[in-house]
Amino acid sequence: MRRMTFRGEGLARFDTLAALHVRLFIPPAVLAEPVWPMLGRDGLLKLPSGDERPAVRKYTIRTIDPTAGTVQIDFMLHNVAGPGSMFAVRAKPGDRVGLAGPGGRGLRTADCYAFLGDETAVPAVARMLENLPSNARGIAVLEVDNVGEEQGLIARPGIHVRWLHRNGAEAGTTTLLQDAFSTLIWPDHDVQLYLWPGWNTLRSRPFG
Image 1 (cartoon, rainbow, N blue to C red):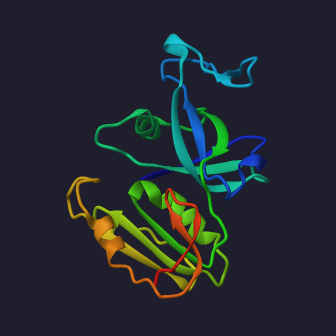
Image 2: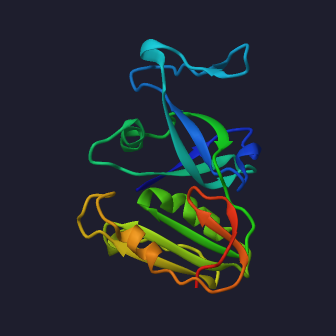
């Protein structure tokens, strides 16, 4: 994982927990001057074509400070590198990317919270944990390769953070998260439960 800090202007609209991810436009490395998308007559972004076309990838904002004009994004460094991972490896001060959004589902108010995911989910989960109310309760279950990849997350006293280790297995080839989900205890009373990723706040029973 590599954390990168970007500097820019007009970042206030990205400073929200209602939508956590942004689209990064990564220009081809061979271009001396990036060519950015433009708004078409229909109000939609039109990407440059051919060799000028940037790669587009979605990432979660890890931290943002509109006053300072900075955004931090964590990149996974994969063995088989895609455009995002390649950019993170070769990036140097002064390189530029485009930013659009925000989008995607974000944090909602609930009585109880549950977050589950592998290392690609850690930036989003970490940001949400840091911004939960002080009386929040629930659990975060995160799968990484080994204990050395655990991160020091900031969590409220009522949130239990549990790490699962693949110990060399490829991501997506184990049932660690599914098994952990199936063992969660569900108290028998009705509360607002927030499940992440992919679920809205539901009327359901909370995790114990």
